[in-house]
Amino acid sequence: MIKKVFYLALILCVSGSCFAQKSKTSKALVPEKLPKTIAYSDGFKHFWQALSEESRGLKSLADYMPSNTMKRIFIFVVMPDGQQGIEGHIQVISQFFDAWTFEELGGYLTYIDEGIYQFKMPIKSLVPMLEIQGIVQVDIPRKVRVKK
Image 1 (cartoon, helix red, strand yellow):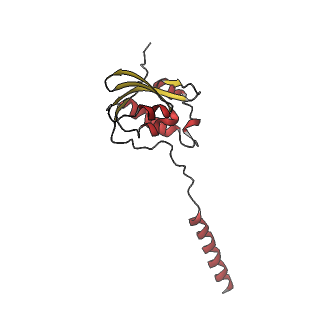
Image 2 (image 1 turned 120 degrees about the vertical axis):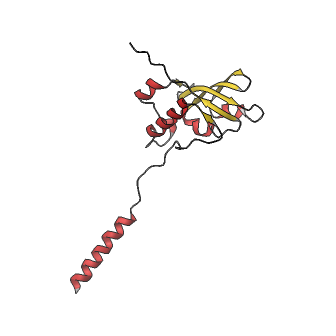
Image 3 (image 1 turned 135 degrees about the vertical axis):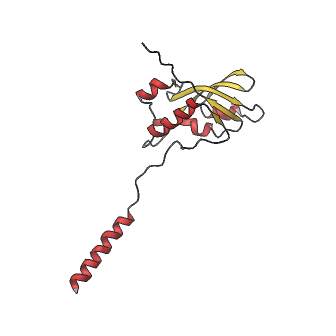
């Protein structure tokens, strides 16, 4: 009888400890889903997916350094503060777009034509950049491969 109670208590303790453990999956720094209010080029979608995969396990996007694979495919720039960044083009609705908020995130804008800007943005600020009102389209170029 005592052996049965002992084994029952042992089984309850072991099973209780198994269910009490928390999973160790880290929260993604880059959301998998892009905001639906903006249109994205295929290049940006591909970049976003690769960035999401490469940034897993980092504490902050400020710590992100692109892999050699990413450097072969996309154009990275070094921002004045030393952070990695990307450049591309955005289309905006001028009356709703707040360029000051964009620049507060560390980005740079160069006017091209009505509602179209060339931009440079640190990687760490890409997620909040996509939340700025007035941006309707984002495009980043890919490097062109030349076969030898």
